[in-house]
Image (cartoon, rainbow, N blue to C red):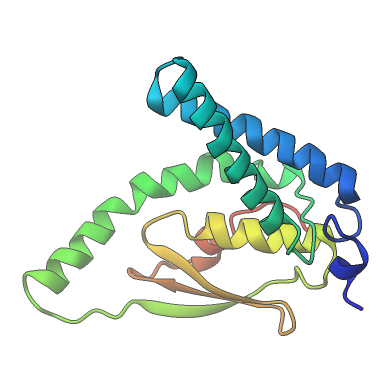
Length: 180
């Protein structure tokens, strides 16, 4: 029997029914706050409609939460360099990306970029390894020049594409510091 079926609130370590109830309450508060920010009125009809909409949103979030198979447990230390390096990539990559798009769009010369396979040791089904893979794929794709295509935990590789190839693709595609 799969782990999520034995634990009705989600996978082991997710808090079970109490964790699901806590998650529902947090999601309800977030959805209600979003509703209030969007409608910008505190009339009774808007408050009641917002409460119902927040309940529907919280219920949907908890139903999705229960389908997860692995919890993720990220470490704050992983983000030591990513917090400044990845937003900087947004700015740094704009000029080469603009050049590549102009060359491709205006001059109609084909540029294909480059795909590279990088060693990636975050294998296994532990919450730490899963969090590391999720954050690497998300942050590694944040800059406009690099897209993380696939993380293969079995082969211990990460496949990334760069529109404008760089000398060190690992610097852009592997933004986290430390190991899982």
